[in-house]
Image 1 (cartoon, rainbow, N blue to C red):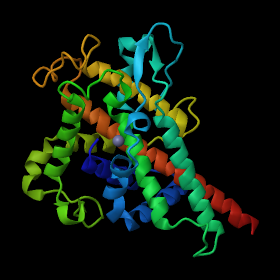
Image 2 (image 1 turned 30 degrees about the vertical axis):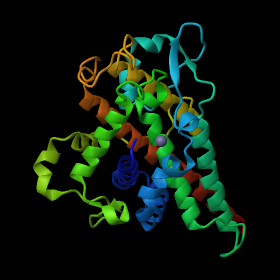
Image 3 (image 1 turned 135 degrees about the vertical axis):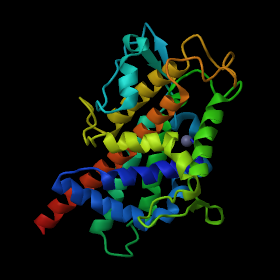
Image 4 (image 1 turned 90 degrees about the vertical axis):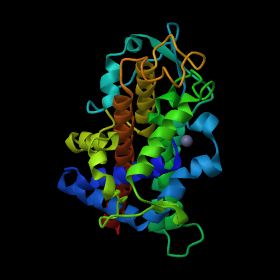
Length: 321
Ligand SMILES: [Zn+2]
């Protein structure tokens, strides 16, 4: 995905946590994260783009490419039932087949390791005095958190989880990501000089009110409605017990969604920029709503769980003292 898409998804994940119903304890945990995020919001665009602009580990860490296979013995995991990609994926004929995973790809590992680093960093900060040479700064932790959202979002782009080569030929991969970014740039006001969004009074990206009527029938409005009606489930889903399990499951259902949009008999050699929208069992709008709303839900879930783990640890530490 592209720069402002990544930044927008991160903001929407926080907005989701702010607006959803939570138990009293979870609300306290979430509010600490929300406050923390808002203090660092000017750096989201740059931070969430860092994996593409500086780290550049796209070839293996932004992807987990799957290929249908009768011989493999990989099994599909499960996701929280509210996920659109899960609902679409369950109906897919490929769900009955196994799949191969590209050996060198490691997106779920990358997410797990950054999540651990964020928790470690917060713990170190808590233990060390201000200015201690081993203590990470707030900015360093914020950067890791925003980078984490990048890798989570990438897992939701179905072509990042499909071994067919859609970045070649007509580059349908880049073309679709460009469409999403254009959409966000169209409906939101961007402070180009400072590489960030302008904000509304609540600290979220400011929408262009002069095209509000058009926005009301847009994919972005549908995403907002979808999440508004979707219960926030903090569980990783079924037997998944950590970020790695959860992100592996996300990649599996992204792969199924990719085939729902571009069926098996197609690849980069016969998908063109004229036929691409009419091949599969799902419209481009529905495909986009599934990708964007599930990505927001996942970033919210992973961030919340990371923060909650740190705060639970902190509470225990304080009880000891
Ligand atoms: Zn990426």
